[in-house]
Length: 139
Image (cartoon, rainbow, N blue to C red; front, side, top):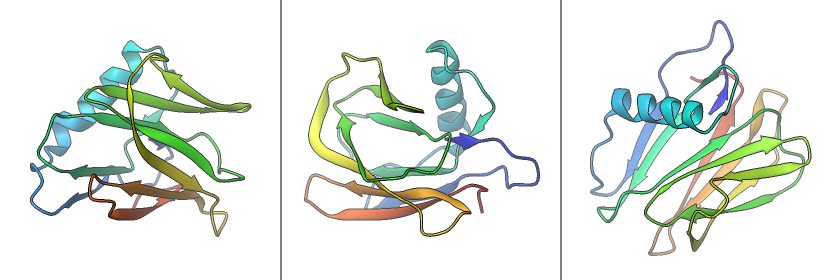
């Protein structure tokens, strides 16, 4: 999730890995927005990227950016549940805090330009990874 800005595209970039279950952009976007509201996350945000891998038990990691990252951040993938990582001035807040996680990282590296929040690195069960540029304005 990135802050909503006028003039940006409304549709997130959507990608999947291999023979993953298809992504229903509308329902997933609504679910993410409802999840943020239910957890008390306030502000105008839009979904920037939707990525899905695998066929197993569904889990959802929502990473909410408020400013560009300044150093590498290691977050953990959720284990079979929904998890929000909310960027705050003093670090990242995990919502809910007791959410179980896997031993697979979601890493965020600093941006290369002022038009970005950073780069998100994901990894799947086989150890393969994908890198996403998190732009301030979606494509």
